Image (cartoon, rainbow, N blue to C red; front, side, top):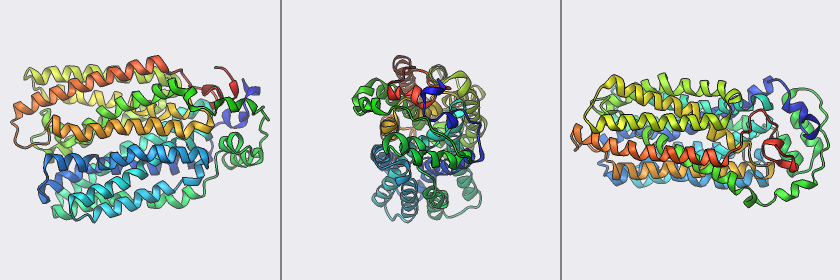
Length: 464
């Protein structure tokens, strides 16, 4: 195996301080991505006290950043494969920061929707670039750990949004100021990392396979390993057969559809977190729901990221993804049946809800982020990841847009019993979506764990 791949020194190295630096730079941006996407659920609790928002306006505001996050991965992902990962690394963070600041100064729902959409472009653009950059530098045996480490910052972004909201609530800050602080804070982290991202070296694989610059590839590897290395001069002529992206259609289906399915139920329950916890009988109102959501995130969701990071290079991406989808489907089915039959046992419901959140992470929430960085060749890696991430955010957008309209859990007019029935119907839909994720993962994904990217993607005609 080792004499077939050009990046043996990098693939079989131990983690270095250079790897950890990349993890921090990528992870800090992803913290901001998650904070900005989920902060709107907390901000809406305050915003509803200030603006008389209709159900359709809540839907549009909730989904605005997600609309941008659908488009951003396609645009930035393609640019990343044409001009390089470094070319736009930092640009998407600047867009994110600008959108966050502008959204905090919105004077009406229309302006808030537009500025959140701009923010979403930056969020979506960060997905393929941060994931691919970390993957193309990481050692083969711990690649899942490093890419999962980047993704784990999502949990802390959600926690920070909830903590800031609770702090403002307890300080009795004017609601019109509170929601602006919550949205504006989303500019802090991306503003910090812009400088560091612009100084990151182009990845060795892009230098080698796309630019044909062996010396540039050596410098990139040296930047992380802190030593001079030799790169195997593998015959690059076979790479031409991989210039047709359609050849990877099965891989596109295997990465895009499960991510779409994941984001329907992940964002469907989390972007309306305070309202969901209220609707399933865990909180008396959405304000109290913020506390419950924070508890669930800290106890179940955040630990799930780190369990996933520990297991993903041992258990493998495919089996972990199928397991996660299956357990989420089972727990939501049980919860839906309990709500439908009026069996409201808070301890049991929060355990089931928490279990679903935990195995969302010890499963598809982490693995769908990792897989597209491993199963596409270098010249299509950010494009492929962008298609998968954009498909995921399309699922999230559909959830954010239609849940308040078809399943009015944000309505204060419904009785508790009526909300239980509505939430039961929603959970049954999410069960079906999770099953779709299982099917497409099983049919179209080959396990890439522990393999150099040239093997897991079939690059250079090397078979697995």
